Image 1 (cartoon, rainbow, N blue to C red):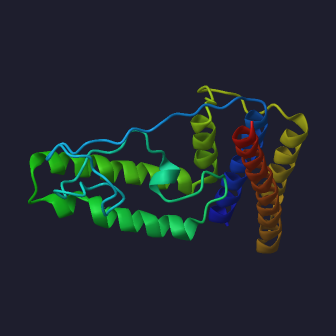
Image 2: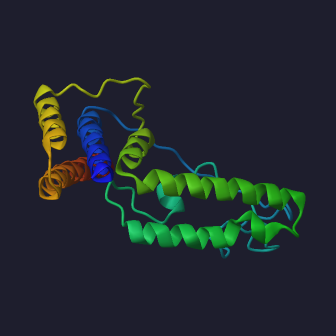
Length: 212
């Protein structure tokens, strides 16, 4: 029972932050950057379109350093959207770790060992960030030039705060599994509603920038 309650509370706070993210996106501007094709550190040639998502030089096959211009969505082969296919995300994560995990570079040069550690860390960070709705939303905002200051108070919508309090009261009063499931169903419905709203907000923002 307590584990169900904890999961429900987690969903509540994710929904709460999700509501804030939607408001922040619609009221802020975006930023963008350009990428530069790197050269291989080992043979000095332009890497080109080699195998392994350009992690490796197409000519000498040396592992390259992480591309600092590549965002998590590009790295994980996901559309830059709030809506992410978690199953495909996990498959991509496993694929990349098979390419760059340090265990596969134990017999390589110190340079490639160091790069593999950086790549593996980056893949882990990207996977964890895109897997969770809240961190995914915050990262999308960051990509668009919107920084959420540490310590920001998200409790700016009094009506929504009342909803949160009512859900917390229902959780506290729930005496049966059926009552707990009813609360969880309410939370899931709210989360889906706000997730859909945020996804539409991001898509509208991206569309307006591409046509502007």
